[in-house]
Image 1 (cartoon, one colour):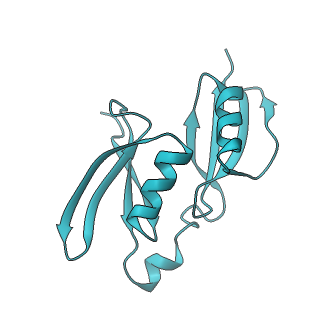
Image 2: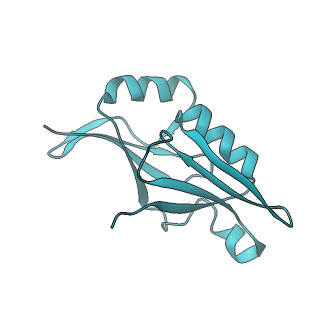
Length: 128
């Protein structure tokens, strides 16, 4: 078994697709109309990625209120890289919002950033 996907609540499909693809360099893997304005939208770091993200448009006030707060303010998503400095510099140049300066921890280099809705992410390069 493996974790194939997670979902993130978004306000608008196209806005979320644009952010994940332009700022993080993800690929749009699937974008299928489901009727009634719903779409099955999947992005991933690359088309072969084992774990993908489903961009789920919030429906109704309860879900809308959770956009950007799915993890209660904690970091809930972890993007691993083997080129931390280059990835960080590229993301900063593209306007990604960072909550802090990069730091070294026993487990590797890390910095917390936000997606377009304020969800917390770690960019991590694991220690050897």
